[in-house]
Image (tube, rainbow, N blue to C red; front, side, top):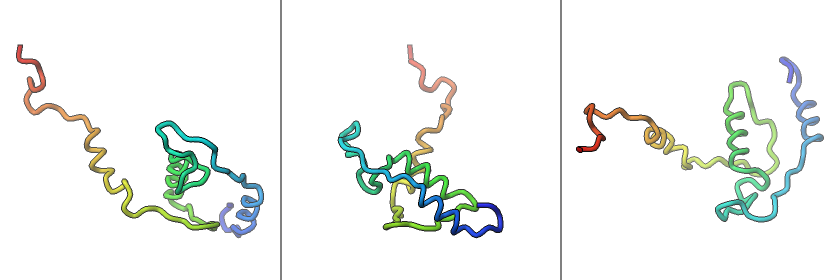
Length: 101
């Protein structure tokens, strides 16, 4: 939407040309049903892209058709702990981790 323009005509045009995504039939690898809640037609990766986009400065949610939820106590609270587990740690002793032979 251009600066200082009314957003409603743009929102209406986007809604009129939007694609309806139906949940796919079958199951995903690992036994998880495709299109399972919370999103009927999007994968977790696609929802993550949308959430990253919504978190950008200047982006705002204009209209929602249906409930909008984002779990307050989801896995995001463990992100720092998980990230620390993936960090590379140098051994404190130069020979630490080497075989004793």
